Image (cartoon, rainbow, N blue to C red; front, side, top):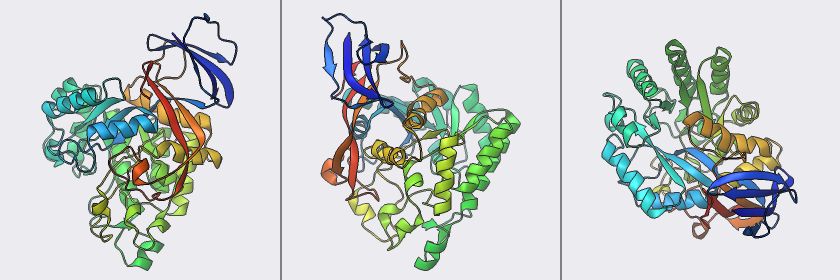
Length: 419
């Protein structure tokens, strides 16, 4: 037994009683019935949150350990408040074989035996080439929980259909990076005012929306679920809303950076702001905020994409896409709470309850019997987004050098205190 007292949950003082890795009860402060002999932990007035779930990360191992490895990725996850993360298949070799999945899970257990939990995502096609389906049944048996071709969109609608059918037969959801590969060819940023001023080839928003519309129509035809990754444009939001209104089993995510930033962050050829899909216009940012509040966008994800510092210290043409997101996601989301763009209750839904629902991952909603996965967060703690303050191996982010407010102070996983 452990009694966690003097904490704040959804702006109310609370006590939390846990036993054997499970929630026993959560009550208003001072109302928990307990034995005086129970161990007690003084939360010091910190904010109590469920451990978060991130359904979209890139941990780079095997093959790109100089950017990140499973141990450092899980460290960033734990200290970022995540009790579970799903990792994409774009490793080297690609996670298109059971042996790769088993390797990932073994590395996770050895480096972080008490959690956070790692949930690998299977490659949809062999080597992510978009031609032959990967052996999804073997990958599911090895421990994969979802299917994706990651950042290489499936050009063939027939292959897409077969992947969705095969995944659904196995109880897995297909996650799609929606991008027309021809409209998007050789892009560097969003196609708009800033790309015109910089003389840089841009990607039009319709490339994402067209692919999302295709997925939704195929999902409707097959009556099967699909999940749209990292939505970046207002048009895609409209198409997802249209699909949901028709009863299509479609879910979607976006990332904190699409809710906080826009294409102007690439002015001056800022490689740290280069991401895929690209940061769009201010009108897209506002449409995404509205979609997140209203549930058109179901969840948030980091799309954690670490790169070595030297890889970003090049021209905009040559820099890889992606941000290191696990260390920053929670305080950035609290910026949205502070701005009244979302509520703290929305944060719980977007980062814990709905991801757990969609992907079948255990989630703590602080009901009796829930896994005792929770964090204590100090909303006033200030720190600088700098190399020495990141738990990830990489610190490629447009927020580099900024003062960040809020940090996880303690983390319990299945009742075990990680730190």
